[in-house]
Amino acid sequence: MRGLMMKVAAVAAGAAMIAAGPQIDSQLPTYKATSGVSGNIKSIGSDTMNNLMTLWGEEFKAFYPSAQVEIEGKGSSTAPPALMEGQAQFGPMSRPMKSSEIDAFEAKFGYKPVALRTAIDALAVFVHKDCPLDEISINQITEVFSVKGKDMTWGDLGVKDSAWRNRPISLYGRNSASGTYGYFKSVALQGNDFKATVKEQPGSSAVVQGVANDRYSMGYSGVGYATADVKMLAVSLDGEEAFPPIAEYANSGEYPLARFLYVYVNVDPIKGLDPLRAEFVKLIFSKQGQEVVLKDGYYPVSAGVAREDLEACGIKPGF
Image (cartoon, rainbow, N blue to C red; front, side, top):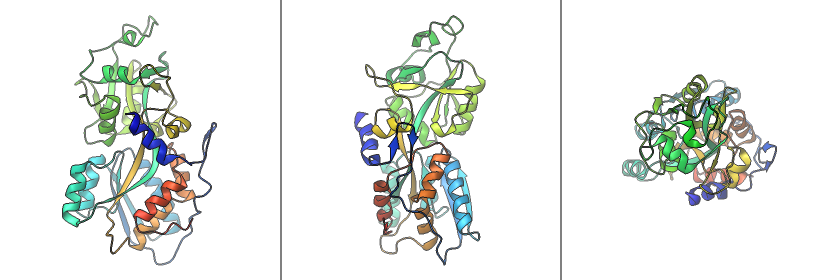
């Protein structure tokens, strides 16, 4: 797990960050419209990234009014088949593709899909805003949400408040089609299965809304879905300091539940991308595209990450 965190930190290094909050890397280019761009874009995949894809789509249409952008978010697992079957040009995923998904894609096309690391997300553990708990460890999260632990009360987590300590912890989470579900199971639950009592929700906002309306509950979702009615817990590796899910600690690797948000693309290594998709990718990795990331509550990637992923698409970065 430490290796996973450090991998996130290493590739994100160089992003312009200050203690007050995330900043856009000054080396990223300002996007400018070009000629000869039109057509329809369809995105199918992660619900977590619905807002991001929608905002990028709106930004793209401001440059190219004749372009049509359609976003469909039913979970990360829907992205690979949509790309393979030609139903979508972009496949947003809140987890990396599984080896089986990559193998199936390569078997059909003779090359692998390209993964674009478009934003950094800190997956947060949410409680009601009035909850007296402020931090939790990975082992405690495993016990609370997985079959490895008993059905727990708030007192089991050290809460001494008489109004809370004997109350059962009501649990909210995502459904199994979600990349957030898979990531949380792999990292936060250390591979253990979820308890049957977890109330599975169809989307990230539904998880946060459930926690906001259920005083004695706990749930997990991307930080971009936080509201004033919930609180995000600081998370620790056992025996170590707990860190909140903010940009500084997501980039440093000290927050244990940091991850990239990906957009997968079918890029023929000989033909490259058509102008429509190429310009959409350029927009994502521009100042305007990463400002969208900040607007949606996530953390921007560095110019170094942008260069690598543009080159992977056969696009010369030019910065």
